[in-house]
Length: 120
Image (cartoon, rainbow, N blue to C red; front, top):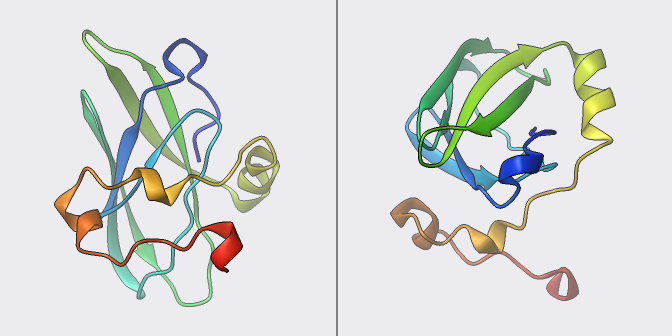
């Protein structure tokens, strides 16, 4: 989840899970996805790369807070694994991302187009 970034609110930061592009975050947004248990390397990429390594266990929920700030030319980010309690509190400040805006990556273009709310 990304709760900050007022000075770079339009910046879109890529989120990757062990080499697979998941989505992009924007100010006050979050991304949620399921994955198989095992080692995970969660990465935020824009002007810099920030990574959190963790071992994912079945039926568990993990919260990673993405801090963003202005870099030299574009947004920079730092990822931080946080407690479930803190994560559930911070997520109340966020909205889900618009996954239809993530078509600038080959990984996204090969996925089926997401359904609009009226199609669900």
